[in-house]
Structures are given as C-alpha cells and as structure tokens.
Image 1: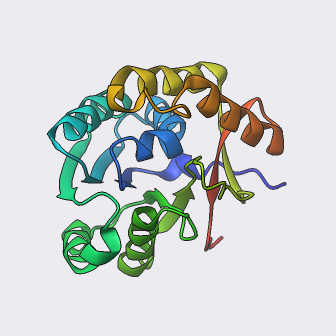
Image 2 (image 1 turned 30 degrees about the horizontal axis):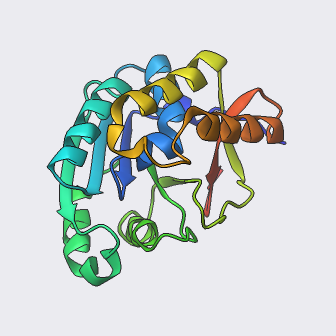
Image 3 (image 1 turned 45 degrees about the vertical axis):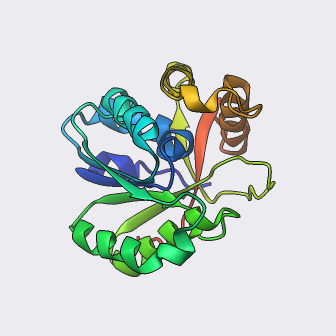
Length: 207
C-alpha cells in the first residue's frame, strides 16, 4: 500500500451530489478533515434534486461541513436524471473551472441519478483529480475502493452527528442511522490499516 496525502495540495473542491445527503454520506468525513487541515479551501457544493425542504436541509448541512461553501441547489426530478440529461449537462457547463479536486458519485453506482452525475463529471472535467465516493443502499452495489482517506475517530463521530442532525426527512428510513455510516467507515479503515476511513474509486491518477 502506497500512502500519500493528496489533500495537502487541494485549494479548491467541487462537491457534486444527486440528493441532499449524498455528499455528506459519501465524503463528509473527507471534507471535514480537508477543511480542518486547510481552512481556506474554496468549496463549491452542488445538489441537483430536491424540494424546498430538502434544499433547506442541504444548505444547513453544508454550512456545518463547509461553512464558507458556495452552495447551489437545483430542482431536477429525483429518479429521472437520465431523462433530464441535457438540462443537467447545461448546469455542468456553467460549473467549469480549474478545481483541484472533484468529489462525485461512482460511474457504476446502481442509482441512475448517481450515474448521470458521475458520467457528466468525467465528460466535463477532463484534467482534474476526481474521487468517486460510495453510497450504501439496498441495491448492494458496494465494491472494493482503490483509494482511502483516513479519519480520526472524532471526525467519524462528527460526520455521523451532522448527518443525523440535518436530515430529518431521512431518519424514518431503516438504513439511515449512525450504525450504517460508522460501520462502513470502520470497514474502510480496516482495509486501509486505520480505525476509520472513507473509500473512493479512482478511475485515473497521474503521478
């Protein structure tokens, strides 16, 4: 295993999520660690679906994870991103910039909305470091990551605390609890010789 801290050179990050809690579930710990180590990192935080209530949750959550983030919420229809592909691509074109890091969904995620954002990220940002995060779900589509970000226990705890604090609309779902999120971070930590970690999929990496 080769260990290197790519986060140390990040000065700007684009976070892409199909739904209001995706970024936090997939990369919330990484964002907390990144901003704790480099508070001046510029964060652009984009959520592509949701009603007014879900958008309010997204904005309140982003304010805790990344206090100075530029938060943008769009109203694309949940579950129908493939049918809205052209309109979503138009928004991606407006996001074009020289980010150091892009956090997005996996290309082979079982959720159609997630896949659309991942595909457009790779289509739009051709010379950027893209880390594809994972979302646990009933589809059972988790795969073995090839990238890990280690998290101290207090960061893992904070990630879970904020998820439960901000997403009241999701707490009735049987899978949306601290046990789910903490167990996945523990498993990824085990795989990468740490206590806790978040896993990512790197399609391309230039050294």
